[in-house]
Image 1 (cartoon, rainbow, N blue to C red):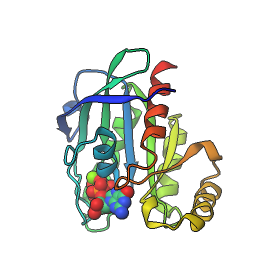
Image 2 (cartoon, helix red, strand yellow; image 1 turned 180 degrees about the vertical axis):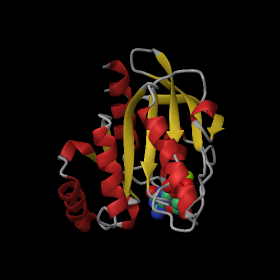
Image 3 (cartoon, rainbow, N blue to C red; image 1 turned 45 degrees about the vertical axis):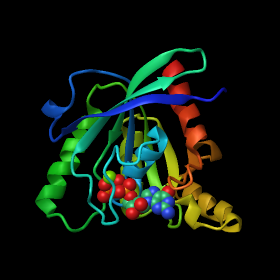
Length: 205
Ligand SMILES: Nc1nc2c(ncn2[C@@H]2O[C@H](COP(=O)(O)OP(=O)(O)OP(=O)(O)O)[C@@H](O)[C@H]2O)c(=O)[nH]1
Ligand SMILES: [Mg+2]
């Protein structure tokens, strides 16, 4: 496929409840994963923007469901508007239990709502095996019949020779095939054009 381009990207809103999600319905690509795994950085890498989504070295940065409107240019000259949706991370111990429960409920509501979610990118730090919270999140997405692409983040932190071993461990733990796992580095933009292809394909189908 020819190169897919992102020709525009803008922050739309931060939702804290189902009611505050944008009324506008566009195809949505959703980014989920543990706190600090690199969801917001991935959105910046994809859109080629330094700080469209706020990132931080400390986990727990994203605390709301953030919607970004993105205009893609497809090879057939067509341009399409979609939303990138940045979710707060899970597995972050510092918030209270009540708070975590409320969030889990809201995220669950959002994922179960009938918005036009094309697929969910579940990010997993490539250096570590999926944690219990990752397995739980993955199972929840599968249960909702949402297509999931596993994005193995921070691939720049792993030597070339170690990569396959790490990818295999992730695949085995989640029980998914080669096609469902994509290594990504937001600092090096590795995996970017592959992910843009997957996004474009999800819009055509
Ligand atoms: N080396 C490297 N560091 C990365 C990469 N992606 C993210 N980081 C770093 O990881 C940290 C967390 O990144 P964020 O994008 O804020 O993570 P997040 O998943 O949005 O975190 P929360 O909003 O807290 O859930 C930051 O210090 C980033 O610079 C990557 O591909 N490579
Ligand atoms: Mg974030």
